[in-house]
Length: 86
Image 1: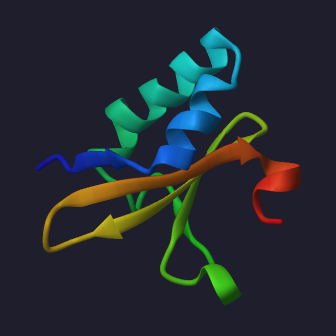
Image 2: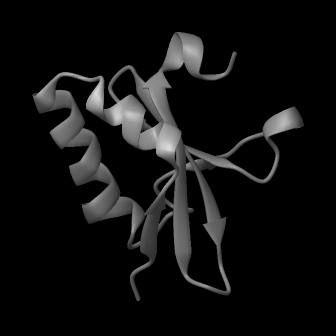
């Protein structure tokens, strides 16, 4: 069963700031993989980000929350690995 995807405003802004080919590949990662198995295609975060998950695409990270009961993924932020956790 696939999950529904919701986007936070900041994540939409992050995506629109990227090059079109990278943004398209990230959207593809979300719509083809994360929606089917969000836990298998990401890893849980720790410390102050506990409860959130992270998936990789090249040098980029997709930060998201999984709402199991609602079968929903909330995309919170997208950015380069070196700055996403700041």
